[in-house]
Length: 302
Image 1 (cartoon, rainbow, N blue to C red):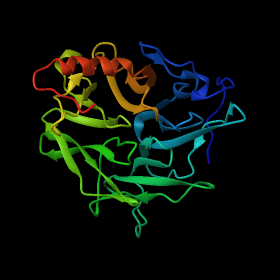
Image 2 (cartoon, rainbow, N blue to C red):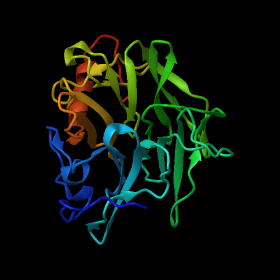
Image 3 (cartoon, helix red, strand yellow):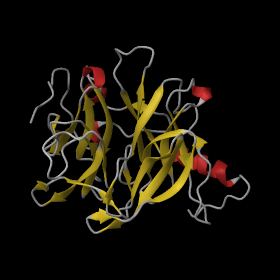
């Protein structure tokens, strides 16, 4: 394993890397770790906030590794490469709300191969009594998938963004069946380029990264959809200026209880500025749901 140079990183004490819980406005999350001269993003936590994983990109973006940290005796360890990281690109990691499974994207060789794959696949690893088991490629309905940033609901259902056809993108989900997953179900799609799929633990909303929105200078921005009583999903709703800017917002994750929302922002105008991670109380999403309820024909299941 490799360890991050700890120069400039203070001793971190207590859950959530020792950070004070966020309020109704987004605040930067632990820049000493996630913005200390590097581009790190996409942090995901265990249910009790005492174990964390995130993505770290090399300068120029040509490679990416999965990094991990643990709190032992109230003190956080140095960030180091995760035991299931590979020599190829690994990124976009998400933990299940029960803390028992991690899913991420990888270009590592598939079983039986020795060379890096031309296309990425989704991989997973399950927690064991001794830590983490052996990673394995994810299959949905017996087929491998190549999704954007995945999300996992409390019942084990996998959510992901997918390319439906030329110029059409969507959000799909696949119910867990044993170690693997059933055939995916497309929830909604459109001509807006969709990326990450961040799902609430109770599946009461999905946040996705959308590209090409004119109000944000066509930068990647975040939008939310809510399930309706008839099994449909509401049109994507802008998370608003509280979250979105004319910069790039992406890499969304949630705490296991659904109360803390993490996202990243990149300054397009200054490439020397690394990605910044923010977190905020998810109450703002509930307010957006209330606004959606006032729209005709919307009757939420939640």
